Length: 471
Image 1 (tube, helix red, strand yellow):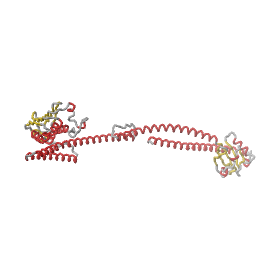
Image 2 (cartoon, rainbow, N blue to C red; image 1 turned 90 degrees about the horizontal axis):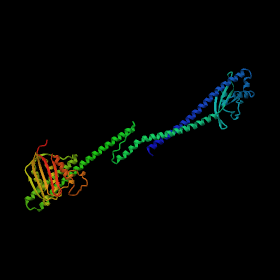
Image 3 (tube, one colour; image 1 turned 90 degrees about the vertical axis):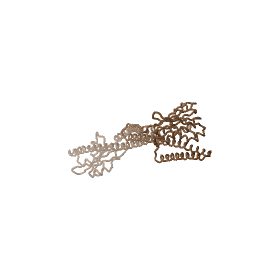
Image 4 (tube, rainbow, N blue to C red; image 1 turned 30 degrees about the vertical axis):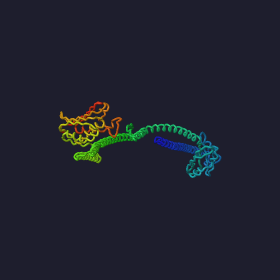
């Protein structure tokens, strides 16, 4: 059972209990007030009848003993009850009814007469012949002594009918009020539950990661505060999740790039290891071993950087700009890649004069490795020309191959991060990470990378480094 139905049922039970209590209270109050009014009326009649009886005695028409005798009492009772709606009885000291204006013989003996002869008035309600009677009895005193008593019997049938009509009216009005109250309460509970139902739906959406649902409540109550708190919570959760996705994206990009770069020194190590097996000269073997050691140290440093990044949570590449002869880095990089170049039967041509530029040697060597490796693996070239020139405050490296080139569509997505590339093919030879990483490395050093290519005519990659010191 829903909350609205529970509230509606509780409200219905409460209203029915209140109406039932009101019914009994009104019925009791009405009955009591009618009895009190009739008792007061009979008391007033007794006062008038006593005066009239005393007047008869004082006029010496009869004496006080004859007033409560069987000869005169019936006449006096009938006289007093004339033009009234109640029955009058006179009783003597021996509790005998000596005068009776009616024929209710079953009401002649009652305990109220004993009370009256003790000097007190008595009021009782009794039933007879399917109706109720109110009996009011009072002592008659003469010269300070009780000489008898008057007794009045009032038929309460009219009161019973009045109460019955009242009950019908009360039940009818109560049913109408109950219906109106239930309709009003159901509408009120529906309005009250609307924002709670919206909140329930919004929570279901939040549980599946949808934070777009907002709760709008116009009332000035706790429900509005609850809705406002939920909206704030939803916004905060959305911001935290977006931040978490952003941080996860940064971590994934960093580790993708780092693991991609680990391939270059490993490839060089494997290449020089293969060359050693084919060499006879000790000097050549020592040279290969030197490059293996150099690339191993570089690989170890990269692993150390990766470990430090994991421990410290710092995902930013460390850049250390130095003034370096770019031609030396070019020569050294080609020497490291020599096993791969020879294995691919590619003829290389290097034209490099001394050119002092500001760069990070490690990052620059990574860029050169990636660019040359792309030309070897994907360009399907046979010649690779590398030219270094200094001009207009820049050191420019031109890497030109005679391979199959790059289509216009592919050139537009070369530097996009891998997650933005649609339908990219991932293989053991290509992960789509190298060129975006080269662009990032060049920009970190204050340089840039530019690629021009035509299908079937080869590709040119231009790297630009600043000859001016960083600010």
